[in-house]
Amino acid sequence: LDPMSFTKESKAVIDFIADYYKNIEEYPVQSRVEPGYLSASLPESAPYCPESLEDILKDVNDCIIPGLTHWQSPNFFAYFHANASTAGFLGEMLCSGFNVVGFNWISSPAATELESIVLDWMGKMLKLPSSFLFSETGGGVLHGSTCEAAVCTLAAARDKALKELDGNWENITKLVVYALDQTHFTFQKAAKLVGIPPSNFRIVETSFSTGFSISPEKARFAIEADIRSGLVPLFLCATIGTTPSGAVDPIAELGKVAREYKLWLHIDAAYAGSACICPELRHYLDGVELANSISMNPHKWFLINMDCCCLWIKEPKLLVDSLSTDPEILRNNASKFKAVVDYKDWQVVLSRRFRALKLWIVIRRHGLANLMHHIRSDIGMAKRFEAFVAKDDRFEIVVPRKFALVCFRLKPKKEAEGTELNCKLLDAINSSGRAFMTHAIVGRIYVIRCAIGTTLTEEHHVDALWKLIQEKAQNLLME
Ligand code: PLP
Image (cartoon, rainbow, N blue to C red; front, side, top):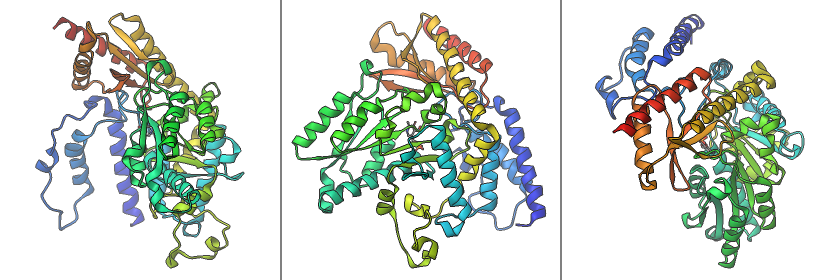
């Protein structure tokens, strides 16, 4: 790691990335390569001698870029965005540059302390109750993904419940986890990983009448049925901004149900949590004080480059009880006298990146004011798109919009033809290379999801998307 060549080569890569961003709209948004495409262009085995950066970047350009789906393209409206920013990139550079491994406090005190501080900053921006913050009895940790956060909270909830059931591990077969048909599948995976029998993962069905969110009555009904069968309700996952449709579960009412039956309530705000920094959207978090834990992904909508998930928990001791390890090789006085946070005990893995740097830098470079502006501007563009759809009789909005996700479809002549018609429309749009959207099934209806929120998207991109949709719909209807 020679500082001279480091500077020269890093600059070359930065120039390369800057050119990529300059040309990003020229690429088809969704990659068009066929499976296995890359092995035809790359050698079968690793080089014995070093190669020049120039040659490598040429291959990145010729072989890798064609196989990218351009998530940072302003014409990317698929899944939920992963919105990058210059500040997020600078944070990633510093994180990579220092390359420290802060698994416990002593292994890099700044990594631990900055993480605790920015999690309190974020918690305050979201107006989380102080019981989730280090400044009181709670605390937060940065994971790479919601899936990791889900595994850890479920493990803590499981161990707490098993302890209350006489510490007998055989009781794990009695524990039940509740979610809804719109809950992210990551929670089902996490429940399986912590040993909850798949048959004890209850999926409560949603409907149009509840805006595709969980109905507290249905949750209560499922819980009571399980209690009557001798099972033990363990965990309820509520979502702010579901993946298929952006629906919001009624946190306050679910919180009361969770309290009544002593369930652990987790709030998954992976997508829409970022939006709750805006006072006019904060009400979606009302009732959060009744939850045991909450997570959100700043890498989705908070200008943080991948990867970054904030998890706050009211009783961090439960996480630590479940996940701590005490190998001789890591013993030190700071940990021994319990004066510090050792984040290895708040997560699955041992080694961890200094992710807090990018969160810290993004917050400082933008300030709360610009971060709110960023969210509002995306929501404004989503409203504009929604208005286009609403004005055209051939289309309909299927789910009421709450954030920057619009779920719509081309109206079929007969309901049975709805899926095929909209599938064809989506294919025609995506294969044009000019935009990329994805679909979902809500209330048994196939919808096209237009998720607005990549950093480079401007109004004229939304207008162009709508023209493209109309053009493809017209062709389809004339067929
Ligand atoms: N929860 C919601 C609501 C999501 O939208 C997603 C991903 O889109 C996840 C969880 C999964 O997040 P991760 O990929 O960080 O595990």
